[in-house]
Length: 189
Image 1 (cartoon, rainbow, N blue to C red):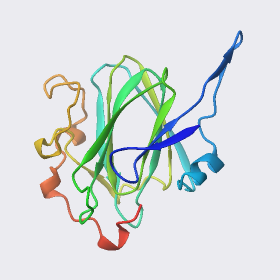
Image 2 (cartoon, helix red, strand yellow):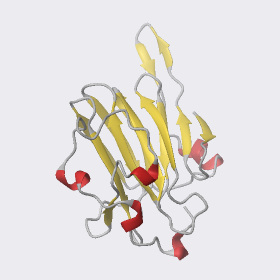
Image 3 (cartoon, rainbow, N blue to C red):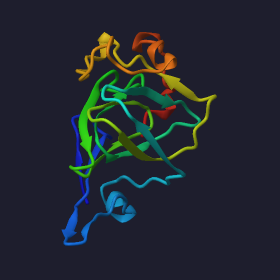
Image 4 (cartoon, helix red, strand yellow):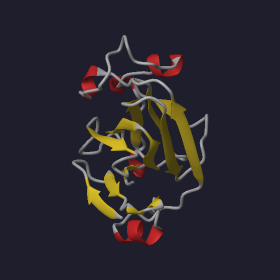
């Protein structure tokens, strides 16, 4: 595994190494010591998986607020997505900025989305399966939403609003300017 920084501090790209032979392939998707050596030493508590049958399915932008903030290590098991992380930590130098990375099963890459970042995806291929590890259990009380296509974010989504497959909750999420401030004591990821 190789861990490299992205344009925003605390968001990291994790590249898995695929080893193949006549039987197929093998790869490590998680190795605690490699991530810890890069400063990503987190206790994961839950693994999640989602299937999105249609191209242009948007999930997000979702996050959890303190005291239950959630970091995610995201990968694609089948298909491909545009994966987006938006800094929602008010007072952060990168507040409102985002990282957008194409993740795919073929590329064997992952994205570390730290606590304090809203996370979302848009599927690029049919029948895409996403798997991710999280650092905090899901909590309806602490879950928040950010409008996926808020113009203030400047995200170049690969689907238009009229063609995106969304649920009602994500379609009506608030814009960045409408979010409650992230607690200053929790600026660190």
